[in-house]
Length: 336
Image (cartoon, rainbow, N blue to C red; front, side):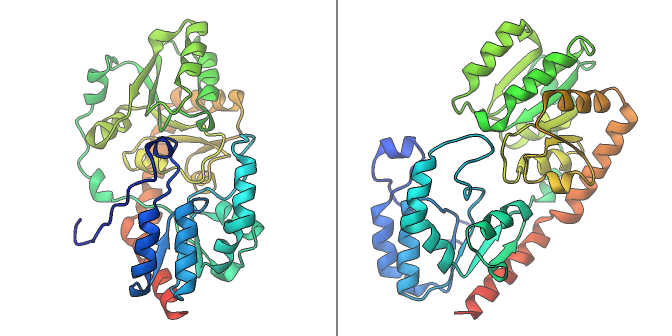
């Protein structure tokens, strides 16, 4: 694939795969045979059997490895208790040893770096490298109005967009509460929730049914490629209302499209956004007030759009992030 050799390993069974639990015995066999031929391993998993396989064989063959946990370090995530006992057990058996033996641990931002420190990772092994986007993908956006026409939204409608998987941790129920509150003041406001259902859609549908505003909320399902860009382009504001989110790539995507953003302070990217966008506490009233302040003030909305777009171009360009990754790789290999 684009000059990269890709190996595919079948999961142990379909039931595990459906629950997003990766266990690939054949990968363990391949690691046992071939890992010594690699200069470096970049591990993008933490609490999985596959991560334990990588750790075991990399340590045995003295191959340096970098761990990138992607927000998976906390055992309890912002009041969402989920598999806490399993996570603690994994840490006791494998996880803390994986963290201890990693040549470097890549954190997306300072919040995740602090999570690393709390689990015993020394500062000299932590590298803070954010996610990035390819700005070239945003140089030619879909025609304005494309998304609105497809989903029956009028030009005069005020479109509030949230995009991501529909899961409790994403805070979409908070967004609905804020939207219910602004609806009487902004009758032309419409809420669009885009993304695949991850077990929380029925809860949101029940809230909407009880509030009797189903005609003002649109669920699009997953959006990809140009369809996603069209949604960003036609939205008046993008909201990430998460209970917990280690970064939030969709915030960068919306910003690159020139759409103002509002995020909660529980999003890892909040520390960056607060310099240019709006950050609110995880509170329906604060989110309501922030929405009104943006949607009722065209000048402020335009100013925020320009600032967040400038932020992405300066700090999250792919070439700048690649330089940091390459530097981390070189340092890891040279410490072998």
